Image (tube, rainbow, N blue to C red; front, side):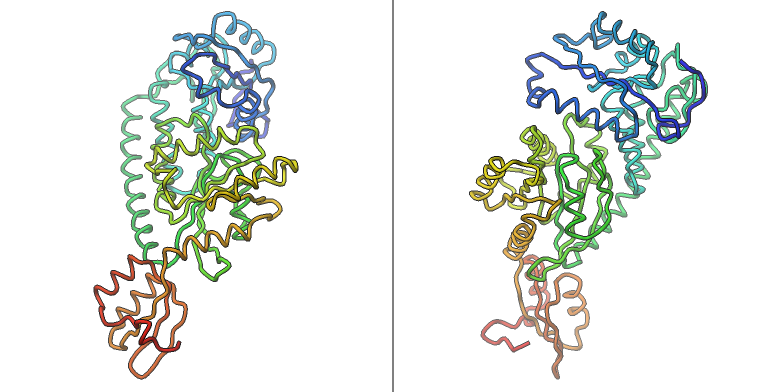
Length: 449
């Protein structure tokens, strides 16, 4: 292998990868096997291409027993080592979580840089993060992941990889990073994150004063969330056919058919075997979903594994303390019906016909979008109320309060004050009436506006 210096995986020379997919045949791994082999292989290829690596080869290695020291059996390791020697990939990617010992031993066996699924996902997250919080979260998760992997003896790849990636190889000459310094950096990052989150909480609190409900898009990565977001808001959110195309939440206003305005939020796509510590690191990002008034779960029904992908999203939402089966905020969206044949499309349509919270659409062609928007409007209207208040001119604070916390539908002036017709949540209406019990114009006394 060449000892030439490399900049990063985004350097001009296309970097190459060998993918090793372990197909595990163990009883307690049945959960992982609910997805077809082809889809698992295509997914890891997609993840690899997401950071612009050229896939030289994908090997499926059957495993009936995971080796504690090196994950794969001796014969498999020898075969892979021979292939690596002949083809010289820049990196070997194992589509599974490896222990630090397993990763180190595989690197020695292959004489090549090895990363596991977690490391690959971290690299993608690092490339996609746009906000300060997103970048801090990525760095924190990466450092915590790397901390146990940093002190090791390198017998190969005595080359450096600079750049901001988290798969950066041995560093300047050898990996001799002081654990104490890593610990200090983690402590500093946590403090910075807390400051950013404090600001975020203030921002979220401020948004509570805005009259617009929040509608959050969630779903398995590449399900078409960003395409749907773009269609609804006519924005230019990054929506290429790449896994994890969106990382940081994106917020836009959206006007519904009945005139209501909502805030639409697009969040990071979920994926199977997402490491627990990574979910924790991105919890603040996903809190946009936890606080949403409506959660739109976008499913790619054209995928042969859409049921397994659906289950993965449900698992993650429930890990965030969302009761998926009973939460009235959840609306399921069966996307990409334009890619189905007629029989499949009819089957999906039947499923939606018997469920008020399930809709079949194509974000690509626009099919079913109007029906979906009407359903969102109906769901929001069911909870909000239209009320009329007469605010004396002397009480400017009450009028400002309504402007902040309700949607002003109509406003007229008379000799005594301002007559406001608003759409307001039951909670805010109750709060307003507690402070101003005589301002509401009840139906029998309501004036024309």
